[in-house]
Image (cartoon, rainbow, N blue to C red; front, side, top):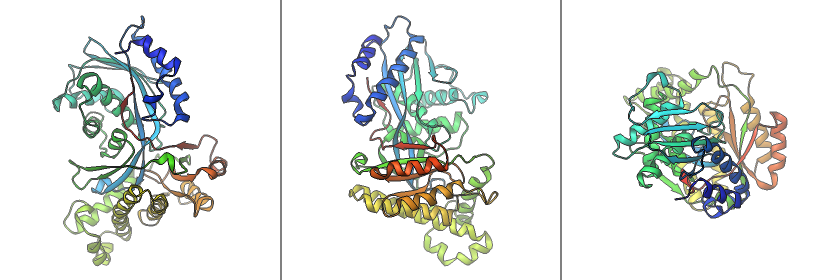
Length: 427
């Protein structure tokens, strides 16, 4: 196992290309060498003599591709890990304590013999670390002390799941240092969800963690949320001639909690009309046959949102099939359908509280003008404010980015690729 100085030399001499090829494109190598060199240097705070055996880790953020607002009603989702990631340097210690220093944040310190829920830590990263450790133990796996330094390129608040990327990084470190890599990515994702639900006190689903842990394009069917069906899609995004763009429209997410909650509540109210808890227990035909009665008992928008749910489940299947067949044109057409449905039926592109504030609508409008017949575009994540997603042909990329920057800001555009793997150890 390499010590600090050996790993430092690997980074200086750039001898990790074969390892990096598992997660990055060749164009990204130089930047990754710089990032890992920085976290390794930061690790000196734990290793003044540079003699400890150090390992390098990474876990990606994720993007939702299809299945907008379906997971909470046990629907289907297509997601993908992205080229923005968390990187880490870590080494075992003999203190039975986990210390994690993330760039720009205070150090998290968690004792491995104190894994009870700490209510005062809810919402803090230390609670995620403690929750991960606790769940590893509950699942019969080994844990132990380690020191780590991390740095993240996963944009906070962008819908790219920065917290899940951190969780999967921690889970991958525990898995490799203490369990010989035997814990599957799916299990690590479930452990991360537990940490976020129980210790961090955020009632998230499994989408974010699963996409970050498994990597590549991933289809997730939440019909049984305790045992979701996960399938990876074998598609080489680097060969399709497109870039994935996330555009931050600079809208605020404040005061939108009730907008998000209403989507789930209205879908569940339609299910309740039939004596069911979630829409996955109802059929599209049942809703069509009872549309007038549901509109009267709940409201018209609830019917539209239910129809969006059923349509999205179908589109996830079609997107999966298109990618599996290498048919990127059909895939793009289905992405556009998903965006149209979110706009018209799910109605999460702008909030009715502020009808004149429509940055997402504007971004989608200009995207359609520039990309129609060539690319694809849709709302990204929860909606109402925030980001859109676009698949842009590489020969149009400069034109598209210039238009989006003129609308919003020079820092509003993120050009990404789909990363083929999830949480990983390089050294």
